[in-house]
Structure formats: structure tokens, C-alpha cells
Length: 573
Ligand code: GLC
Image (cartoon, rainbow, N blue to C red):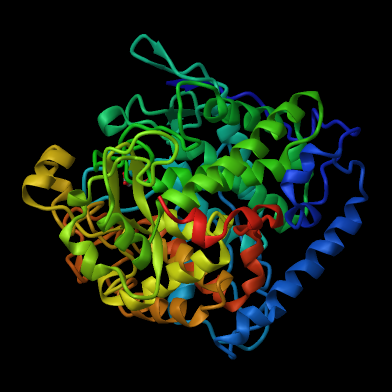
């Protein structure tokens, strides 16, 4: 699919009437109150910026962050990069950032920045994203494309380094791709679907460039990129929060793009749960891996995107209706997730003793889960202190696997209560060998093997046990761990993980993933120079150096939801 790309002037349709609430204020805002009173409009932008900085400073100085680890760094400021030259379609000549504070960055940091800049993709002279992997040794498949999910850590690195332009370009370009007519064979996809990836095509004869995008119609297995739209909204909020520039999110086309994404996932159907029903392979794990139904990765991203959208949507005629629906969904979703996806020692013991075949609303075992379906490994894996959101919950099916991304996003979005967030970190600490081992971090735990592997993956040779999506270790996940650590006041955990990664990542040329129970081996089919491994490392480093960056990817708990969630009654199935 390709299309001549129309000229987008981000400011051309700006309406001056509706100005978004200052984001710093909204972050602290209790979203359930939005249903009761109108949003503040037309607030002076300068004051919102000042507040943002005050807010961020207070995050950096927050005693919670330093109570467990007194040597947490105060914000460090990187020098804005100097442009030496910027040849179209070639790598830019930005300088590697250096710290003002005399802090000597690890030598890998400079190498990582160089590699990240080499991965930039240009469209008509402007950087619009980063290529998935620069490795040419293997067959390219689609690793020469800009993936929406892969670009997120790159975008965060650029935002943290004071280079928001590429992020803005990416947001606007992908928005234009969303408006294409999308078809798979004769079936037309929903208007709001965002692409999994896109690519710039150069025509040397005509000396022109066009974009082609993949909405799942070319992807292996024709998988749906459900996460792309969520990441897009999350990134729009990160951009707005980091720059204080609300004008991008205010653009009518951005507002519309958001509404289209929301329309897809808030539509009414036959659902009996507030979670989002998905096909297998619709997220980072983009192959058949038994992550169909209600996978934690999607539910956590869904929750985060809803919360971000609430901060970004205007309360105009079109926005209002969505705001109401979002507020209702957030309440139902947080209740459902915190109650039914949460597993700790007590909950495990309760399930172990469950009665089955209970009818009516008094049922304790609401989903009719058979205690016999509890896998052997879970009894050893579950520490006395700690817990996590399990992989999936639906009728008679609980997927007890631990998934990294969903649990970290649950912490960052405050889908997890503060107690649950602490418990997730406790579990990571006590199951360090299994989850971090020799390379952070397991995408999921444990691997599925033999007969189960045959049934669940469809005999996928790329996903054999302890490889790739099936218990492989993905360096990109380091940034999520680091952010979750900063949020929960446990930076020492992230520091340990980063040190482990630093021993190998550069030497091994930034692999996409590692294999083995401990993540000791470079993945069987892992690409080298995998951009999100590089960017994930940089974001993790910058997050620890300057915890105020956390605000870009984190939202505080909504105060109104607290009373509903007393552990004694709501954590029981
Ligand atoms: C693989 C990963 C997917 C990633 C893509 C590009 O398909 O499973 O998560 O987006 O590679 O790196």
C-alpha cells in the first residue's frame, strides 16, 4: 500500500478557541470528577509550563524515590546537541550528549547515541522515525521498517535529550497513515487502526519518496497491531508532557486520530468484561504464543492509553462523549484487573482451594477456573512476598505466565495500586535469576515446552523454549524496568540490571534478544544493531540519571479509585 504524502503543516488547522488543560495539572486531576464538572479551558500556557517544571523537580526530589537508595542522582542536564550537518537520507551529525554535571557517562552511552542516530529514517529531508534493525547480515524481512512500538524508546531518548522534532514528525506521519483506506484482501479495516510499521520508498528515477505502511496485511501471520494506536496516544502525551507544547495534541487531526483509536476499543459489543478482546500476536509478541483473549500487555496499554487520552482530549462536542466513556471504562477496567488478574501468595492459595461449578452472583470462583489447571511451576515461583498481574483471564482459563511489559506498564499507568506496584518489584527482586539472570529482561516466564509448545505456538521453530518470545530475554525491556524502579523508589534494582546489560550489550552488538534460561546466549535468530535494544538502554540510563524524566511515561494514581480497592474484599475471585 502506498500513497503520495500530502503536505502536513502542523499549525494549519489550529483552533485558538479550545486550549487543553495544562498537563501538569491534569496529571494530578481526579478523572472521575470530569464527569461532574467542565474542564478548565483557556489557561495561560506559560503558567502550565512553570508548573510542569515545578512538578518535575518535586518528582526528582521526592523522598519516596530516595528513601531506599540515598544516592539517587539529581537531574542532570545534557547539552543540547549541535548539528554539524544534516544530509538528507543519511545519518545526522549530532554530537553525542555530554553531561554538564561532570558525571562521566559509561563509554557505551556515546556508542549507543551514535548507533541510534545511524538508525534514523528520513522522509523528504525530515527525520520521521528509526529503523527496527540496521543488521544486514540476515534476510531483512521487515526489520528495515519503522515500527510504531519499536520507535517508542527511540522517541523517549530523543525527548529526554531535548530533541522533540523527530517525535513530532513521527506522530504526524503515522497520523496520516492512519487515514489511509486499509484493506486485507476484500476486508476493510477499522478507520482508527494505526500501522504496525512503515517504510520510506526512494524512487531514484523520479527522485521522489513515498511511504508504504503495514497494517497487518503484510505482517507474518497477518497479525493485528492492536498496541500501535495505544503507543501512539501514549507517545503524544509523552511529547506534550516533555515539551510543554500542547499545540500538537490540540490539532484537530490529532484529536480526530485519538477519537478514531478510542472508537475502536470503546465500541459496544457482546462483552461481559471491560477488558479488550484480542487475537493472538497483536502486540510486542507478534506471533502465535497463546496471548489471545485478554492479554495483560494489551490491557495495561489500553488502560495507559485511556488515561493519556483523558489528559489530551478537548472537551468539545466530539471529545466530551469520549471522555465520559473513558471515565466509565477506566473504573470498570481497573476494578476488573486489580481483582481478577492479580496473583500473590494468598490469592494463589485461594485458587488452589477453589470450588468449581458455582452459579449466580454469589460465586467466589467467578470464571470457573479449575484448580487442576494451576501449573506446577507457579507454586515454586510465587514468593511469600510479592505478586504480579497474570497473563490472561477468561472463562476457565488463567494464563499464569509472568509478562514483563504488562506488569511494568501497570505500574507506570497506576493500573497497579501502590501496594501492587511494590509487590511486583518485590517479585522481580526475589526471582532475579529467573527474570533477569545474565541479561535483562525476560519477555515472559516461564517458557512453554514440548506438547504445550506444539499446541500453543503451532510448532513455531522461532519460539522454541527459552528463545525469542517464548521466555527469551529482551534488552529493550530495560527502560520499562528502569521507569518502574524509579516510580516505586527502587532505583538500585534498575542499576543492577543495567550493569548486567553493560557487560555484554555493546560487545554483542546490541542483539534483539537473548536465549536460554538465564539469557546467556545471543538469540538464535536475533538481529544485531536492533534499535530498540540501543534506545532502551539509553532511556534506562537517562531515567536513572534524571528521575524527573519519569513524568513522561508515568501517571499518578487516581485518588477516587482508592476506596473501592480494599485488598480484603476485592482481591478475591
Ligand atoms: C519482532 C518483534 C516485534 C518487533 C519487531 C521489529 O517482530 O516480535 O515486537 O516490533 O520484531 O523489531
